Image 1: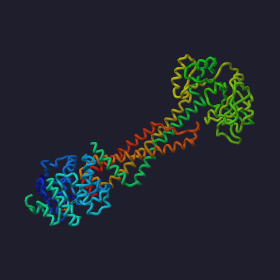
Image 2 (image 1 turned 30 degrees about the horizontal axis):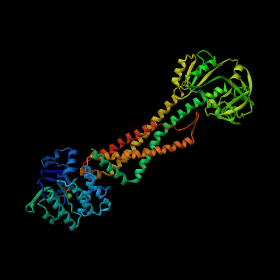
Image 3 (image 1 turned 60 degrees about the horizontal axis):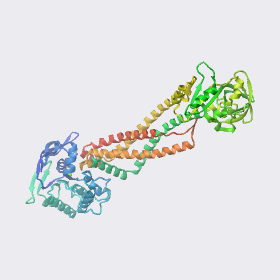
Image 4 (image 1 turned 135 degrees about the horizontal axis):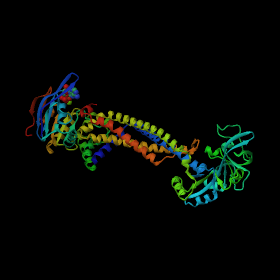
Length: 229
Length: 400
Ligand SMILES: Nc1ncnc2c1ncn2[C@@H]1O[C@H](COP(=O)(O)OP(=O)(O)O)[C@@H](O)[C@H]1O
Ligand SMILES: [Mg+2]
């Protein structure tokens, strides 16, 4: 369960203050698949960064499964990201020196997973996102959409209890997008994974339990989409 | 913790494997050259000391020198003293010498230098001068009108020896006149010429002790007795030993006889060496720092990503430290090879010093010390820039 209360995030650039978040409160239950939508610049990435423990809000609080994650030391936050979260960056954020497979198995390696297991799991997840024949390619040898799918595979490889995905389908054609969303939906159901996903495609709504729409750093609207979730 | 090191090693290795080959090779080369610089100078200094000491022992003084006690000009009862000395275990030879400052003359040229009276067989048991004849032969016991002279003293026709005594072109078979300090003069036939490269020795000359005793009116007397021991480097122990056998004369180690010259030279060399070491290490610090700094700055985004996906900054820092360790290890290895090359060259074509040819004497301790200081310096110089970048805010780093 993610509980965010009254989040604000103010960027100061010289004399100009940008309020990326102006007071956002949000609860995401365990196993929920939530969509965050809104115009460009409305604060979606900023919110996801904060929920993903990559950034700290200017004010407000974030509790995940009862842990006040803002109160954790940097070291604890790093471990929290490693062990509990999967994060798909809007700009993929792959390690250019590593191949697709290495990018994916890096975190299981850090978690001390046995070699056979992390190799198998990483190859498996890459196949599931349709990159079975691209495992040994490096970032520079992959298209934007392929890079995006490597980023997705990396976020999923440890079966994290919470998946945060920032426009994971932005660079995918609608058919690939659909297969990725199907994968998310299946993981959400099978593993009871909590998913918070930023999107601006209307048709994605059919996958979400709930859609939170942001506008100028505030929640404009919350819509229930899917019944029975 | 263990898996942390594994990840650091993984990242370090990928970075070396897929990073710029040129930068890598250049860095290794610089580290290797710094290593050579760290090892080379001490090896030459040590070589100078070794040369000086072996030359002193082999040609000039033996390991120890027995001299007349304070106030006497000569040691009396040389035969008996020699026999007593040779009873001491570990003493392998003794050679009494009579020394006199004389003037040598040849074809109107003259030179003042030292003439020694020796017993050829005894001299052979201590010094190696007899093995270094460039012309003619060494003295033998019965010689009375023969002299062997050093190459510098013999000189070369038409060449002055730069302030050193020289007869400018004496050859074997030539006759030279020797004016003794007591006013007597003798003419000797040159039997041989030796060259030891020790200038104090190569400007001297030798006749038999029997001949010189006759001229100077000495009986069973000598100016000094050179003592040779089985091993070098234990002169102090032998000195104590000799004194404990009741020898009444003064006993000096060859080091004491060289009047602290070596010690002084070593001290000056050590100062030069310390400065050179310091400069080398500073260069090493700067080079490694710049390399890792550029490396980390170029990888700011990557470091941010690594932290974002849950890799602890210590693991990231350690991956840079491991890279530095690897670079330093390879650099030191290349350095050892380069140094072996330089040493081999200088052993084949030694540097020529006034005391004789100097061979680089690479001590294992100097190599270990250089490796240790290189590693220490590199780790620090690699850690600091990695640490600075790794603690940067994640999103700032990812944005680049
Ligand atoms: N590092 C930053 N410095 C200054 N302004 C920022 C920074 N990051 C985001 N912003 C601003 O905050 C607002 C929200 O940005 P963001 O959360 O990225 O929007 P979205 O993801 O919805 O497009 C935008 O106006 C953006 O310009
Ligand atoms: Mg965004």
